[in-house]
Image 1 (cartoon, rainbow, N blue to C red):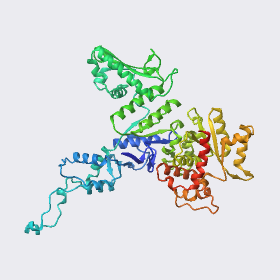
Image 2 (image 1 turned 90 degrees about the vertical axis):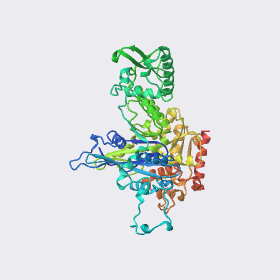
Image 3 (image 1 turned 120 degrees about the vertical axis):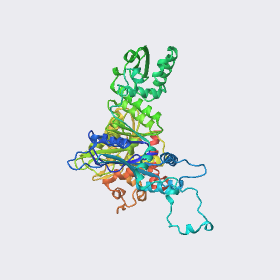
Image 4 (image 1 turned 135 degrees about the vertical axis):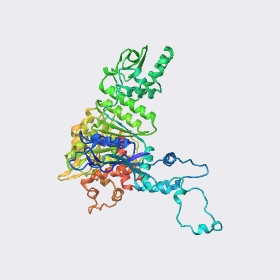
Length: 610
């Protein structure tokens, strides 16, 4: 089961977030925006939904009547939904199912493809409710018992004088009344994935902890939760070690330290002092006293032989990453499928550590659904822009969440929110790194989305990155960065017409003169002009574009750029990209014209990068 979408009303700076649809293509969604935009509020609202308890500071400022606060979460059911639901209903209503009887019409329950649970705080009281459609399907699916109706011959005078009322409720295995909506909502909530919230205050691994703190369950002790997470990961119990003899305890300690370090090194890719073999170790110290005079455990982080240092002597970034790693790993072991909320996990971490966090997120997303907030371009992957939701905060609308290409709010606030995305897609040094050796430089975002989509639909497997620029005149900057950092590059440009001549021809000649000393043939190896194609949309047939929007009107000059409209070029190309990746558009629907045009471009790319 997965969370499809959610909506938040009257929570801190959020008046009405509108429906926020999560990534359709994987289990990762990103809330991108500047500081104070409301990213944390969105995550905390989801956490309050999970607790069914709204934080006291979550009420929006109001001089009037206290507003009703609401969070709606819509889930998509999975193959285990019906089995889990029936199990919970039987337990809640104290029903024992007989082997030869069915309690529910399972075919009718299959109609529940998704459902919406609401958490509502009104007048100081909090309750959960389920949407009416789901509630009605559930009520109608309850079967009656197996008592057979009497035949006509068995009916007597008493039956003839019957008042005709149907005693159906008494025959139902489970009686669900109209007042049971909240009870049903609680049952459905219990089978949804657990929502876990992490912010900047996750418990840091301590330098030392006394055994008495663990034995007496002093969960307010500094580092207590981090140590308990460590126990879960190692499948051990530090308190029980006190009763073991020294050789047994020492052998187990060595094995557990080795296992812990190997596990951590898989996710921590940075190099410290020339090596990335960071070792995490504990050292159990047996003492005969009690409390602060009793046994304790030291914790160390090693980066060189014989140089164990306590966590507090390591960088804040390393110890924060370690503590977050302990939390995530422990939760992942405890639960089969979670919704993890990470509030700005890039804090305190430099670039390489942020990439490690991103790798860990992608790894955990194979099992868990993850929503994280950020304003760092290093936590935004250009191949997964469909994950990104912009968080904007305006005076008129409060905090709103929308897709990159929508235009509900078109102000300076949106430009600020878009900055990390703009940085991530080619306008910052991160994209041109040693990890991106082969770059295909395109004119803009529309070209980026179309080429990415057509690469998938044509099943082209080449190993290269598409880098969107901001128009043909700015391609020089991207080429210069590629050359300066020793990266391979080629460029694809439209055959655009401009007043006074062909803009693409001017750009070709400019690259030829300043980069290749006037060598025309060498320039042709690096720069591919889409011959007679003015605008990437004209690589397609008009009917290809109607797969995205069947209401568009064909331009009188047969120019697809004008049919789409310059103001929505980026939005349109992103919709095409999303429909291809969700398999709503397949290769059999694409015209031969488009396939031929793009295949020629891909042939050029792969010839250079074979």
